[in-house]
Length: 93
Image (cartoon, rainbow, N blue to C red; front, top):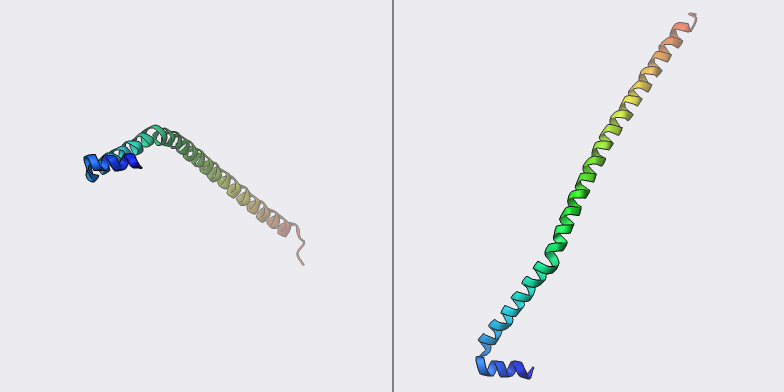
């Protein structure tokens, strides 16, 4: 703390403050370029991979829904045909 007071006495408050801000800006820039950018690059790759998986799952769900719809339609058609056959086989009163 005494060193800072000596610097302020020798160079002035504004000059010491400017040096402090310069160091802070350098520290933040170094942290961003060395720590955050590589992690963001990895995260971006993972995000793209996850989006591709979601698209594939969505396509699978669409195909599955189409198959379920086709089976339900076939079941309905078969039930109608069985009902018609029963009507034909029943003796008339």
